[in-house]
Length: 90
Image (cartoon, helix red, strand yellow):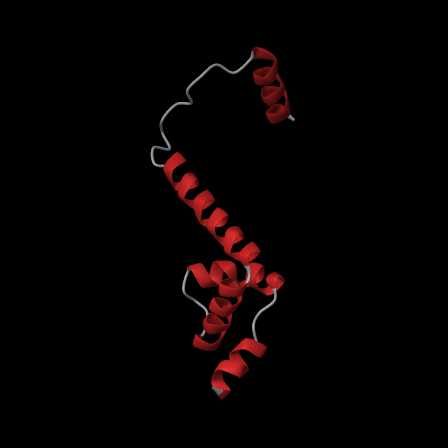
């Protein structure tokens, strides 16, 4: 019971969750910080949603870059192409 009270009192802030997110996902946090992280996301629906959206973004990026040598699909308007080319020349 004492440990549970200590954990609840030492829960991370939302800002700390954001700061530690990559370390958490890559399992680089220590046991105590991981436990605090879990307590916070269990109690904070905003951070739970943020983490899920972050994981969805990573999954989408991985899916997009599965075939990096593949050409883009669709037509890009000429004025946009020219703008990109002119910026690259600078």
